[in-house]
Image 1: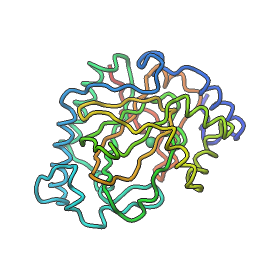
Image 2 (image 1 turned 180 degrees about the vertical axis):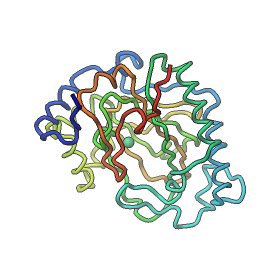
Image 3 (image 1 turned 180 degrees about the horizontal axis):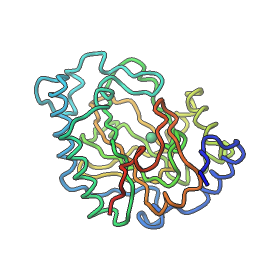
Image 4 (image 1 turned 90 degrees about the horizontal axis):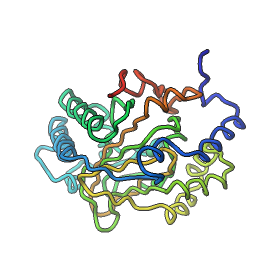
Length: 289
Ligand SMILES: [Fe+2]
């Protein structure tokens, strides 16, 4: 029988499913993090590979004429590149990276194989196109941030694991401009919203002060350049505006095949593309391992 779309369920069913999920132990906690909300993983030289790739693409796309340290590129960018759109909080420069090229894709593919061989030693599906984000100081509409969410509230499945890779060194002040709430604080927050993730998301969109209330109960991500942060998809998180430097990062999601096969519903993104979170949709057609 064809699985139903999670998004199409009546609200009470969604709440019931969400509650059950938050009160169980995830694959990530069980098999990877020993119960923690997040862990840091050494990714060998891949931070350097991706950092160089971003610089190469900045030149190839004629955004910058020469190689400039990524932390300082905001000083050389056109103003319009720094402005955020109000719908998704994406600035001009990040939009320029929606498309990459064959060379970038091949570096990413070799990274995925590295993960499969050395880090996640179980079959998994992984996002085919990673998201590249470049947050600069300044820019119109930067008050969009902080904006708390988890990717589940944007349509992703509960069983995913978020991978977040900094490609810049952290600053003293704002570190990477990225905050992550622990699973226990996320759960406490969600209880206040009756396990209604849609409601929590709409409140974060419509009532700015809620995001500032979430800041003190969320940690500034402190991951060293050269490492990758992996976190339970259920955790709330938000970007923050950058003040002293630019941050470049890559985010990508994986889901263990075992978790995917157990999924009761189909999951679909809320964006324009209505992408399905399944092999051949958001993920590579084939699993790894
Ligand atoms: Fe997210």
